[in-house]
Length: 217
Image (cartoon, rainbow, N blue to C red):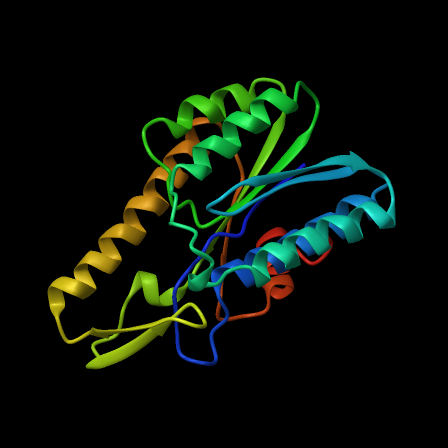
């Protein structure tokens, strides 16, 4: 099963991809890999509004359906859509996965972990009781270290916001929020012995996955 996060994410500059696009690419790589091993593949694809459940099947058509669903939600990432950011969707999807996945599934969670909190480990505990889990943490390097570059424009596509990156408090806040999410995801990963892949927006997804898992994988 793939749990694919397609919520709105801001990014800087025209050369960087949105985190949602990188999540979509990672999901495509995972889906085709699972199918190539002769296994069934299904998905929970979610945004700030709802979650789409695609039951697992062993077929190229099912992989295409999953990718089509991801693309549809990716294209819907538009500030004019009226969807309000909903961090609670992360835990909500984990709860839904616990209800659907009874045992012996491989669950790949692909997300920037926006919404991860103290409640999250409880859902992960239920999920890992009878299933294997893999975390793929999606991030933009600018979240880790916002440059001191004066006024910069951030955008999600149709909407832009200008921030003064010369403000040290602003840079510290960006870094602190990133570290909070990463630390909570890392702590949950260690507690449940869950492999954690960190995939960023500044390099090809497949190269990063190969580098962390090994070319043979």
